[in-house]
Length: 224
Image (cartoon, rainbow, N blue to C red; front, side, top):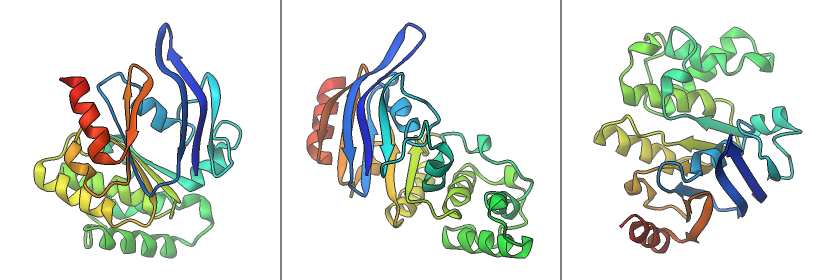
């Protein structure tokens, strides 16, 4: 369970979250809203990338502010721009790098990296230069670098913004098949087929929280 208790936050004089109370237990949850609505800030609090100025966040009872290392073992995060997450020369090395703190032999890290790459559409790319992959492949690589750690929760912050339609569809199919709880921040409403819950934010507040059809109807009315 992910819980937000009276969470508020501001960047300087600009308030981006105002007293958010949420309990997320569903397997597929999306945050939608206009730019500046607070949805990305809220998502980044789940693994401690942003700390609330008021209130608290809990992930299975753990506070990301106080228990950051333990929470990050449970929560993987995929950013909009995959280049910001790629740190090693090849795809295989990049995924294996995520396992560096687990005390595994190099051969085992490489084996696990190859296994997760193959599972999610990048089989045979272990030795391919990571930054020469296509945009869709880079986003899959960033995803694999999180999934190799077998997190309980995967948070994705607008992961398809830079992708073409074919790669968006493929990424959506990959997300749909994951056993993890997925929290997705997106403007791409087509990705939300099969989601359990959609939370709509506006001006730092929750203005709708429902099944996708009802929540998205509210969102469409809101943006006119």
